[in-house]
Image 1 (cartoon, rainbow, N blue to C red):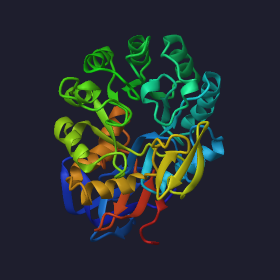
Image 2 (image 1 turned 30 degrees about the vertical axis):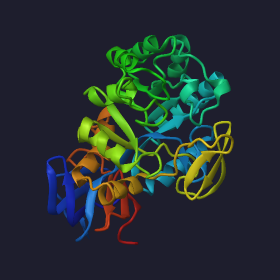
Image 3 (image 1 turned 30 degrees about the horizontal axis):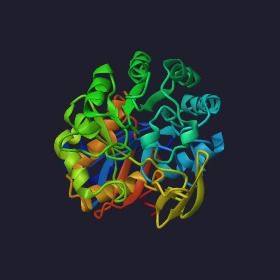
Image 4 (image 1 turned 60 degrees about the horizontal axis):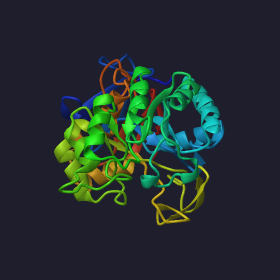
Length: 381
């Protein structure tokens, strides 16, 4: 077991606010309120200490895929994102053959059982061909509750979320089934009207999958799903803050209408995150990554992102000028609460896992701790 540590002298972001010249005490895998004898002191003046990041929508990284790779691939991607501050990750699948998705879910479930990931997000195949984005149209299908149940069962209790076009036949019944099984129903890749989206929320949907992307825009006579999702306090809205998926004004609009407590920053990352430009596969579709932007080779649709959450954090503070506390809520506390893990992660409080990120005064990542062990040691540079 790693020695006990006292992280001292940093600005520490707590649920109650930021403490200048604060301390975080770590004993074993947990945050504690009293320093054990002979605890190692780590001096961090001029730095920030924030909770480890929680990503509820992530398809891979480090050249490895969560959506179609082996267990070793998934672990490689998880490690890549950990080194960028994401200490808790949900592995997201993409549209595929139903039997393949069920088999792949079984493998991901084993990794969740080992605590390498915290669960599975099924993005597709139950989405709209009108708003398919980087999903194979030939494999899309209406959300039949029996098929939805097949994927949930294949995850062996580790299904965390499923994205649905809830306006499709079977959509509302599928939302109800997911809620019954403790799985988050997310509205996304949808061509729904405002009224159809309201019905989905009333049926139990609680997340907007990458708000603004892969859904109709707001119209003054047809306000569409965006308006319904922003105005309802039951909905948490995912935002991809990479400068490509969203104009800064759209991000500000979401924060203004939803409030900081209802936003979850996600990466929607694909294999190239933390890896580099080149050709990749997202499910069965070929993707070209150029200058950090991923697009389908055929058609040019944006195909996920190459984002890591440390970059999303820095951009939110330095470009979007959001308060640090609001960013911490969006990148840690809110997604942790959404997953039902806020008793363990998402904030720096005694009794919780010692998952944290150290940032310098320019908001660049210099340290990552997971379960009390340094993934990136700020003292080693």
